Image 1 (cartoon, rainbow, N blue to C red):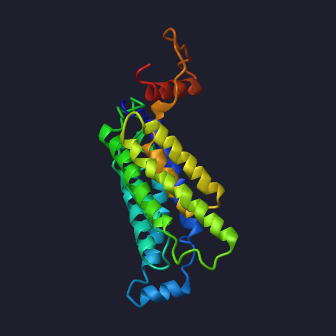
Image 2: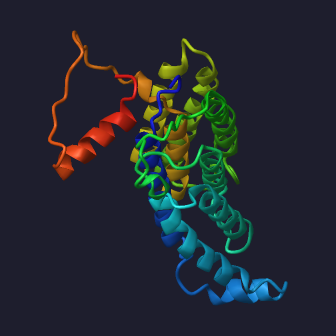
Image 3: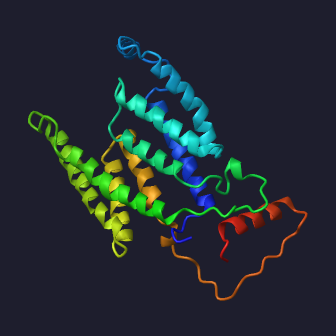
Length: 268
């Protein structure tokens, strides 16, 4: 596993992405009755059915994605929903498209990782699941390319700073300064600077959160950073000698613990 990702770790990431989608959609009001003006505007273009159909798709696809049942198809359906609801009125923040990118990349991963519904009951708990190296490189490229582009859209103030209160001027300038941190993202493409660049980007994300950036802006960036992270960066405890595990074959807890170890530590 050159990328360091295991099936269980990817399943945890899938659940986080799914819950983030639920939170963003609920915050945007996609699960509630559409606003009258929005429906009227869409109906004028014979598209009044879009809020209802996309809401129904989201209600069906989100639980399937979180549980890991047909997760690749569910990820693409959710990405379609986000694209439709972002492009049509009432418009959402442009960073919502980063969420679409994350969902598409999730759909490119091999199916049935450990801890997913599709992997239940199989003889080999891990199922030979492995994150392809090209996907790890692709995730790093997306961070290196998309975060600077997103920062460029944030660095130029719309309408200028004239006429704003001094406090507002300071907040805008501070957010622009933090957005400039995104230009270290290309360092993700180089082995020696990869970990440092990722840590700097995380610190920039935390600074944006402290400055009061909204959730629809913060959540997609956080998910994109998690997607490009490498679990192998975490230091491993030294193991001076191979360990032996004794377990009770008739104990359900022991059985599941052994399956977990077989799936998540196949090389140990």
